[in-house]
Length: 342
Image (cartoon, helix red, strand yellow):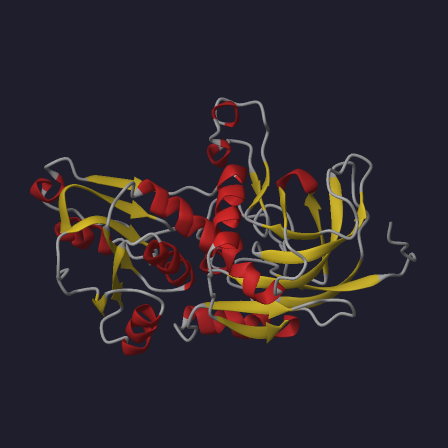
């Protein structure tokens, strides 16, 4: 177990209130509780959900909070009931804790638990040198993997994977909003011989070229009609106007899957666009089963996340670039500490 002095300190980037910029603070390195592990963070992905937390667009945010929920790091110390030992390389995702006893937890739907907690939202996350995590909600990783390139798998990949599962056996799939989740799940869908049609902001030629490079068969503006009738549509952009548009692109019996945690209001649309057994579904969070299944799949096929790295102190720059559409793929914070493999 890691020995700590009383004055052992770490850097954290703290969001003190709604709309604030992150502030660099130095705090004492904490001690793990019974099920907890102390994790030295190697890298942490930056997610659009972090923007929603900053903008106070989610309910009951626990300010002040350290954001970050796509974390790769190493266990430095473990509590007495932790199920993972010191020295383990692990991944930490959005789900931090569930009650384990409600109707949702008892039916393999822990993502809907009424008492759930999330990293970087209810409990301090990975925009830090060290963090605490409940070992029961961590994922063992291959220590030889690049930490920075693995981080996007832990939220963008997982949410994309759950969204793709909700599309069932669809072979023609439209993806609306081509960012972090989209570029990972396009690679998975292409590996499964599905055809991906990528819809981006009108005129975003860089994103369209990126989509084609990672496996899409077509890429164009989101206000264009689909070049072929779609079996399913996955919406990752937080724009409610895309829902009626995606419905008009669907075949009979098709499904629109909304993959974001927050979306602007969906405007009214004609019932005829929904008729013929079309569906609209949302994706809420993830389960640990999702994590295990997706990481097992990712180990069997080559997924190549596109990343842009930033130092921890540049977290505000990473958030600004994400907000302004300057990121191709995923922004990742890297922590330069002795022993970190990024």
